[in-house]
Image (cartoon, rainbow, N blue to C red):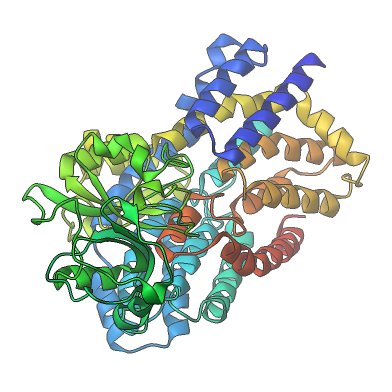
Length: 578
């Protein structure tokens, strides 16, 4: 009883810390792993077995392969031809979302999103489709596509591994498609239809700018030749397309009504507007950044980076970002989800989904972004584009071998080897670029998830739930499991949801004397149906920053999709698995 109680308390504490995003997920995972050993939940020789799990190895292999596929710009020419046909907005949104969903069937969700989003944004810019109508559907479609195959998401691999341990045989490669494919098709069509009505305008961008422009907050000097000199602050939105927030003269703020505050040479203007507008004002020397007034040096670069949930920058103010300042990197602009501007630019506080515009030496920026866990907002790869069809052909061979019955970790190990031999993949560099916090979290949670079954905690939880609902009836038990998975996954990553719920689902099946397949299919489906928050999955966080969404936008767009997916997934599970 002590082991069960301590395990439940440990899981509750870890899930709470994961959802709060105050402590880095790999730190929480390793601390929980060691706490489980200290509590006697598993012996010493099982502490690090998760790092040798075929599930973790397969995830690493697919992430390595995706790095190569992201550089193989296979879809660029297809996108250009597609744009030349002048398709409707709905066709572009649904088509690019379908591409993301298709790619996600054969690779992880993040990889599918990273490969597809640049194509979608290029089409959007060419056809004047707002970015807000593209980023969220592509993100959701990548999650939906992961429902279809064994390797579409780590959750599918984990429930298959749980089934194999319980019955001796896991799911086949496309067993998930009976549920996943209809849900994915319906979800993609629904979100493509809704975003046009939810986000008709391009993020409040002035009509003189590109619809794909993003609003940023900047602080700029007024040079002596600026056309803004003598302009009242109240006239700035109409004449120059920017919204002034503060005017600083010397070291003091200029207070007073906007129609009485006049810009003078040498002033500093804190303003908000479209990034394209500020670029045009800089080109005409209307505004000047204080970081590099004489232009960028040859070894300098200009990049945009997203503040992720696990980033060390969350909650920091711009002035306290020593990780950039000490390396000579300037933060020149900030795109914020909900700007709350008090004081000067250096006083702005960062939150999840914000996008930093950075200027500085290339090596220093790469090092700082890696240390701060902030990926580039631009999905263009750092390495040169790889104009070759061979990586896709090799990956297709790995998928075919896995579908034919070869273990996925073995099949994709062969793909990684051949890519390295053909010089398409530098394994050392690619390993350094992996998302190690997620991998460490996945590996650390596996022994804890196994303890849920071995300590009897799953049986205890099933007994408690049986007092509330008749879980011995298969459809009711599956409906409850699906609901629990969908309720957890907006706040906890889907791999953790699968690890925690798999032993509980197996106990539901045992208590009702049913085959466990349907229960585990429900776990896998629910763990990937994450449409309600921007922080449940990395794709949604990236989409939030790139598309400029607010938290409530995910609720408005996602709840019909979540309800529809739940009902359809439950119906299909009853039809095909009971």
